[in-house]
Length: 384
Image (cartoon, rainbow, N blue to C red):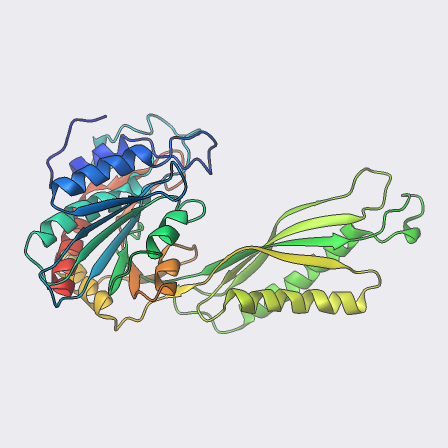
């Protein structure tokens, strides 16, 4: 590990956090998980006067909740960041160096999203020391990179008047992102000898019909009016398997489908949409039989630009950056979707950098400092 940083130096904190292995064990079996980094952050927050608890419904997968109570009659603000990272098997160099070079801090998770976590820690400590009216709530969660069990666990016991999810965003306001749903589609055929395929029902041939029908659905999705920042929804086949051997008509074929959805399109809506496509095939193709199972579904996220938390952060971003921040949408999903589902107005705003999930990862040091200042100002404006 690097030496202990100055308590209020976000770059030093980021280097410390980067030196701690927190690879998600659901992505890399046997990996370290969040235990060490959660303990480090919990101890740091206690030193700054926060009331700290560690939630750990699943052993070895802790999330930290730290609260600095206000003096009363003010709004509460949650700052959410994740502690886990993806793996380092292909990382080029030392993934835990935390090296500061040419204005960048290098290492796995520096961009996604330990730079944001460092900014949260410093901003929350600085702002709450001013004697705010409202509560400052820090939630540093496990498992965002796989199943979001940490944010789900936190939201069962913690609420706030608003939240900022500090995923990396290039210091741009992320006010929307797509949702997603993954489905398993099992097509059921009838096995027969390959020399007499007419005696069977070929599940693989039916998979071809499904893929053509999904092409038609994709065309319908792309023909509508695009979302201002997210464009169109998508549908695709991500995995396919079927058949037993070269000489037998396949009696089963299984497809994994991914549907990326826009705000206003619920998981129930997109499942009904897929079932409509499949029911049409079932009614028009002899022997077509299927079972569709939803594996996981997360709704899309969209913030109201008029929410007080959005206004507070946008104003502080303009102050620190010297210009109105860019507004963007993300094609991928974040824990903001869960936070909004829990009834907490929120947005996504985080550091600049690159290399998320790649062989070299870095955070722009200046953006970590800027994010810290923006978050501190936002906390003060929102909670005082």
